[in-house]
Image 1: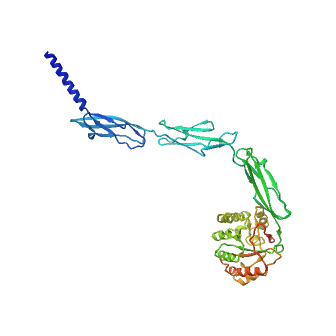
Image 2: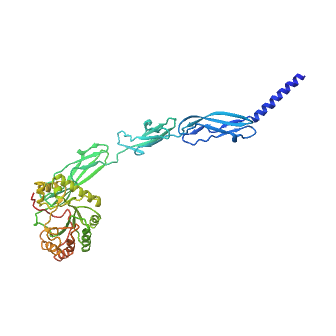
Image 3: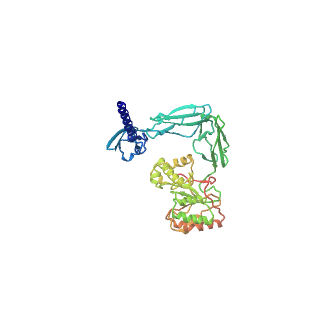
Length: 460
């Protein structure tokens, strides 16, 4: 009997000790064994037993780098009942963010009927792998393309592009040569050609239909129409303008109108001249060597802006035809940047009859007078010279007389004047010129496509 009492006592002691250990023995719980890539890692560790929370005694150390995927050690250390406990755990940095696919081009792809869609492509980027465009897989579905990509962690993204098979784009007709052609009465129109291309049909130049009503024996403005239709019914029509005009012989042919023209501006004198023209209610023409706000004001007021020269340097512009056209193109571009048009009216520095060009290139004027017209320009000389750039530059009375005494109702009166900086005498004479001419029954006009052309005889 005594033997059994001792056995019972031992079992009871073991039970009491085991129960004590069960209630008092510390336990460790890791709440964040996974951490997202790039996130800030703070150990979330709880130490406890059945009776109480022991977490305040915990100390940890780790080598976790959340910028890199992988497994990292977390060391846990705490004291309890005069005993130091140590535990090692594994934390894993994982990537659960899916990559991003972006379509290149339009979300809806357009393909010509009966033809394959030319894929515009897509790009893909991942928060960890970076550019993974080369991993994109493309599958053709029913009227759509499906793009999919997976990153190195197995995260996947998909995007679709729908495809529509239609052709709503019109063909393109490009005219060779100039869109506006100038002819003199009795001349002949020579077609410079055209091309037509379509996004679906390709080259369809042979399908272009041309309608031409040009009558070179009569002055007027004529239209040549070019029309083409692609295989899906889209049509394009463009026009070329042909202006047939009379050729004026110097100082003989005319309409009795007065065309005031001003060379070499703009300058402060231009502003003063514009004020007078506005007050008198007439329009004029400015052959410019530059372009600024005065040029824009003149254009917006209905005056004609024409081209003179970018440099007005005889030794440069008349040294070669290439120099001349470089200079002309430069002033053309300056004017375009200010008023938004490319003027086709021009005047040679010194006039087409100048002889100074002989010093730089013999015969160049004979070539240039024809070539500017071949390139679509119309050049004007003058048949009334105010001499405000000559010996009368500072004499407003003489400038006035030079103009008034040479006006005629039986000719086109192209009056040469200047609006560069030093021409204060021109400004002073201008109002009296206008008012006297009005009293004599003259009307004023700015040069346009209907103006009879006045040319000098070419001397080089």
